[in-house]
Every structure is written in C-alpha cells, then in structure tokens.
Length: 286
Image (tube, rainbow, N blue to C red; front, side):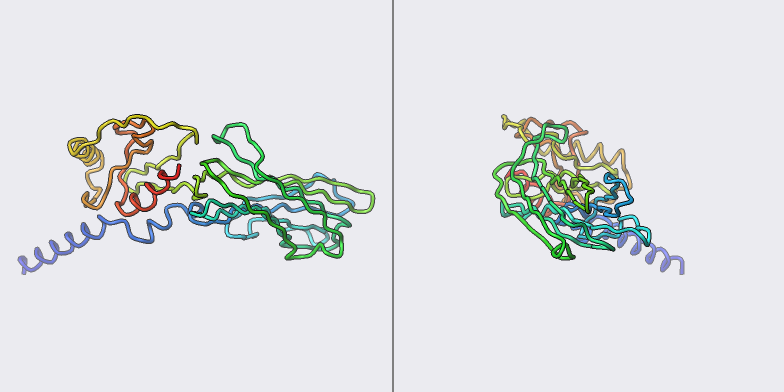
C-alpha cells in the first residue's frame, strides 16, 4: 500500500513539474491586453447644459471601445461622448486616427468642432511633434451616435504615439473647449506595438526601450557558458521556478546590437516561440 502511494505521489509531482514548465498559449497571448488590442481610445464627455461651466469634463482612458468607465451623469445632464481613437495596423506600417460620437444625452449642442492630432515622440518624456491632423465641424442635426471621421497615415520608424483632441461646442451664446488625449504607445516601423512580458516567477517585466533613437553597435558575445551562468544564478534565486530551460530563451532586454550587456539585470527568461516570433520580430523593425 505504501509503495502504491509513493508511486502515485511521484506521478503527481512529475505531472505538476511538466505542466508548470511551459507558458501556455493563453499566457503568451495575454501578457498585456493593451499590447494585443490594436484600438487605443479615450472618451471625452462634453456637458452641454447652459447652467454648467464650460470647462466641466469627464474623461477616462478606455480599451476595446468600452465606455463603462465614464462616470454616470445626473438625470438632468445633457452631454455628448466623443471617442478619440488610435488604431495600429500592426505589421502594416499604418496607423488610423479617428473620432466617433458614442453617446448623446439630452440636448445636443448647436455645433461640435473636433480637432484631432496624431503626435509622436522619440521618448516618453520627449518633445512631441505633429504627424497629421483631422478636423471636422458637425452641426446639430448630425450630432448623433455613430457620427465618425478618420485619417490614416504611414509610419517608417519607431516612435511613441498618442492622439490629442480638442472639442469645441457652441450652445446658444455659450462656447466651451474640451481637451483630452489617449495614452502613449510605443510602436516600431511596422506599427507593431512593443510586446509586454512579465516573468511569472520573478515578477520582472521586459521593459520597453527608453528611446527610439538607439544606434547599432558591435555586439558583445553571448555563449553557452553565459547562458548556463544565468540559469544557475536564476535557479539559485528562484529554486522552485519549474522551468524546462530548453523551451526558454534568455532575452537581452536592451539588445546586444544596441549596446545591451550580459548583466543579470538586463536578462529575462522568455518562452522560445514568443521570443523568436514576437520579441525578435519587433526589434527587427525597430
């Protein structure tokens, strides 16, 4: 009986080690929802009640075209929700900027003028430049849900992108201007968003490059002994990682061809398929 129990426990242990050594397909595809959803958007809520101050505004960043995060309005409020889009045509070197009226409540304004601008930077804290603009003036009969406009443009290099939007309304003698912008996203020359990955064992994140202007340089060597040394140190720090290392690459967060080192802090274990077909492919078009 004891022998049977030992055999069963051994089989369970082997099974748990085997299944934990692989990153499942669902894990690879959902490392960061924002990295895999091509539409990046923001809703600007414009209150049109004459009794409200023109600067009053509720706005939230949302993903997947959801407006659920917008604060509920009072029953007497009149407002228009305008969504500000950035749609990355990943792998196609193209981005589409667009607006869409997604809600109208109560009394619509007399006019609604939208000025939307696609902006890019070489770093998150860098000085923004204008890529292209989209403007439209919509009169009251046409200020309704579904009204939209768009403008596509091509890209040829890696940039940090966002879309800013000014919305000006007139309501009788009242005029108000409202501003908002999407979050900022890093995309390469193919308009592919930088992939997000978090090592589930260490909690370490594959951080994005701080700038899009790094120049290539002579790569330092990375050999079997370097890989073995990393795995040894990682396993000492995280002895219960359960990784089957033959299925993992050791990724240089800052690539060696851009001056990255073999320092432990610059390395992260990444599932091989994800590394080859997603991470390396992103850097190929950096």
